[in-house]
Image 1 (cartoon, rainbow, N blue to C red):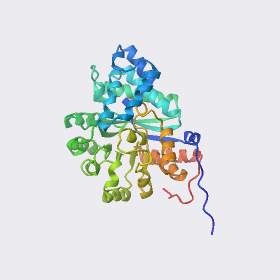
Image 2 (cartoon, one colour):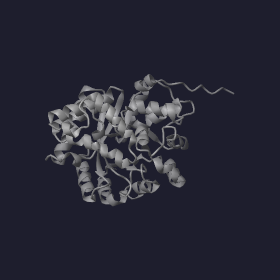
Image 3 (cartoon, rainbow, N blue to C red):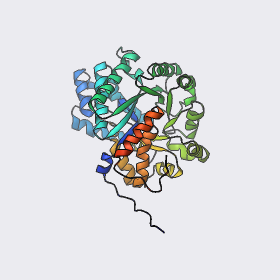
Image 4 (cartoon, rainbow, N blue to C red):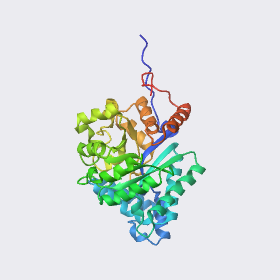
Length: 359
């Protein structure tokens, strides 16, 4: 009997070299610290920030790790959103986010945000969205990266607000926007309260992803799937609490957008080691690894994969499949996705396991 091939060991540099896809990244949580400070100075808003230098602001940001709830974590966006109210700022931030991803070999990036949060100083939703798309397109010309935009409704606001965001997403379908999302404080704000916005998006053939099962239980995931018909689930940490629902994810190959560091920071898991993502991988659920918020989590996609490899019991072959899942479950047309996958596999520096499924 032939002995099984040994599982290779990985270094962080190996993961940096891997072609990667990022499916869950918030624009307003992923600014460069230096840019945040510079925009505050340019706009006369230094009073908004708790520190005045890159070094002191970096130190201050470590306090986010003490957030007791998801809602406390979300409160940190009060430092970034005031700087993101002009077209120039939005273009710059979008461009730099794509550039930062490209520099760590992220080949495909889906950026998500709620345009309504950037209308506080008079911009229309369309002006906001145009500026973000302009920044992403400019980065695509300068770097080896493909980008797409996801527009998010806000679960703690009226459904009419989510409906307006859904209408915007549909209006930009085929012009850079690929999906509609629901984000914000989860507990007490169920997905079904935004049912009509998701029906509108779905009825116009738009892809759907929903934050669910992060700080609320599997009922939130259930609603996201069966009331709102989500194609992907953002986080899904509490899925393990409902074995039947978890089996449904396996049977229907519904992907999870896991953000390990963010999950630790918001205390929905106690540690990387306690994260259920390995259980999901072993069960056969498609898991993707993502950053959530590069600024607030002080992370990169390479870092997130490295944390999973070091602390979550995921071996090199499993991690390879997880990395490829980012491409497999991208919100792209089927033919485009298959071509992207073929291009990636041609240059992927690590072979598949002899026991990997062929798909």
